[in-house]
Image 1 (cartoon, rainbow, N blue to C red):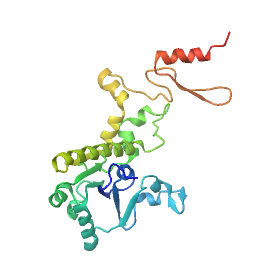
Image 2: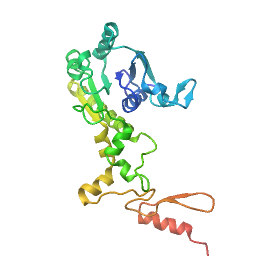
Image 3: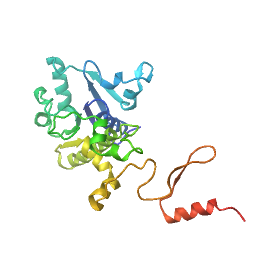
Length: 260
């Protein structure tokens, strides 16, 4: 089937999770994604177990529908191929440390010279001007997510949710920039970082602090504002009740009342 991004060429210079997740979504929408890996391959190719068919399931989970090529940017020939790809790409996604791609001629300013219509997306841990590396766990801690997860001790979420949020924000920004290019012919620099993606994702918990002066606390499976909205024990296994309105509550009580 033809996707909505059919004909869009994406040069994927990202690795691990946030960037590959974003480019996977673009591939799912029909884009032609060329994943550029180092000679050792993406880090997550070795993140196992579990493995499936000899490949790490972590890598497989965020790299479907892509073509892959291994290039050593320190090799002049390989670097030439990388620059050629960047010059043809409609979208370029990278999550190198700040300034790392400048010496290879693959930073936004230099790519824009040869390809002014390119939508260039930079994903970082703490902003494009910060050299600090960013991993999901570190940002869950620094951004406050671990302080409201679990019951007593700071607890990380069971999936790298910050990376996923950053990948989603990057995808939205790329799609908006492609719409801008369609209207003007000019590319844009989309900049996304893990920390601000998490702060955006804290939604009502962040609003409670900013607007209400309430410091969120860990509540386990309870909800800070509505009840019942949690798992409850029963004779054989836990039962989850999620009621978000008085109407829903009345329907629940009516359903639970004995028939007379």
